[in-house]
Image (cartoon, rainbow, N blue to C red; front, side, top):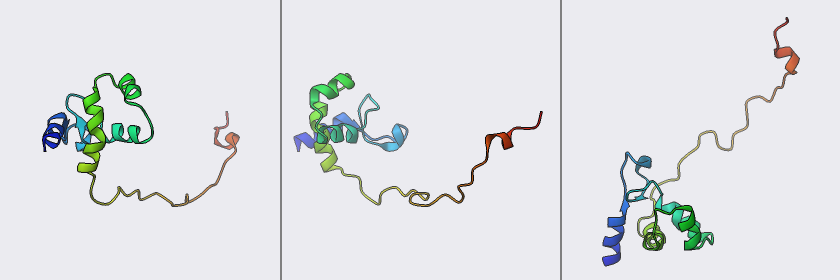
Length: 100
């Protein structure tokens, strides 16, 4: 419970900051980004080199926060995803130039 309370102190969700994405307080660094970097094999030192405003405590709670407060709901839908273009016509560049 103490860790959960500490997470709530270090992470903020505000609709005015990155559309409500959970970020570390006082930064615009998403918690999910740090957790994903750790999951992909980045070391805490590498993350600190890239984001000096973080500290080891914040980096350590990122994966815990992501597990405790996972995003719910359906993934965002891209209406254009998987569709073919309507047309694939091409024009010679000379046909687009106005006669001079």
